[in-house]
Image (tube, helix red, strand yellow):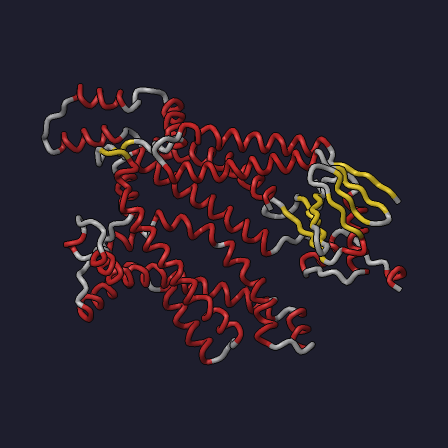
Length: 165
Length: 332
């Protein structure tokens, strides 16, 4: 199997717009604030968050995620590779800005001894990649916390016991 | 988490804009303005009014402009760190608030710490030892704390502090330190006076928090996962701390959003009873005298702190419990 996936432009553009609004809204007053060091520090801190967010979105746009028989590869500026057999920890988290958590996004982080890779649920083919990572994680007895287990169950991923046998 | 933080901060922008518009409309709603009230007051005392001077000041502060123009000038000013001018004190708002904000912060922060330090162990004990003598006694104390009006407790404690410890009545420090600069003696005097307002403001909050933590923890202690954990031989203390206590903490963290605005509002009635130099009574005066920029900036600060408090509690909850709800959708 060899599968290359990237983040869809529609979701990236949305994030670029969010980053631009944040930079404009908090950057403009920062330019005009003269006598209030506390306000300047707060605005500068929030501005840095949005600059960091924009950088992460740009990085995501330049990255292609590939999976093959050996493992997961992130091809891009901060490229890295984690082999299936080296996965020793998996974290699957869910974030939502809605109080009722009705809409949101997932973040899958896989760890090996030396590397760490984070994938967002907007990635094309995220469900398949998550399934493969979870299967490999269970096979390796990787560390997974209670929240991750619950999120795996919520995604409908079941462990392939035939492979385990 | 960075993405969550950025998206969550973006949600705050329209919220704060709507709140600022509402605050501005509300402080403009009563008929007249500060100067009309001021002129009426002078007239009732039979004093002469220089109408030309009043008109000049009104023009200087944009009272002759439309409400929309005044609103934009106010919002843009706040974004630049200019919170407007207090007509009653004839000073910029930031100068008027000055030390009062610091003293309010000291009282509120100490109260929050007091509330958590007292409520947390009592709440856990009451839940773990449900229906024991200790639980009944602490529950009774909790109800007593909830039922006693703060101003009454303030008066009683003030008398006790004076008759037993000889602490001066009212205020947050001895009178000789009010106008003095910061020194060790002034700090010691504040500490000597601080326990009364902290105990008064903290009592009802502590009682409420004990009840909430007890109820939440009891819910968790009756769930199957806790029974299973104990049945599998996990030591009771570890089983309690690792699972049910963590779950029961969620409402505690969600409460941070309500705690921050108290730093500014600072229990106004208690502050008036105890003659505390905090921001609460000042806000009340500003609202009564229609000192619009002072009142508006205070209310905006309250709203901003509530929004920031909610943001902090949401961030803490997202870090503590990033679970999907079974009915929710996972992808964007």
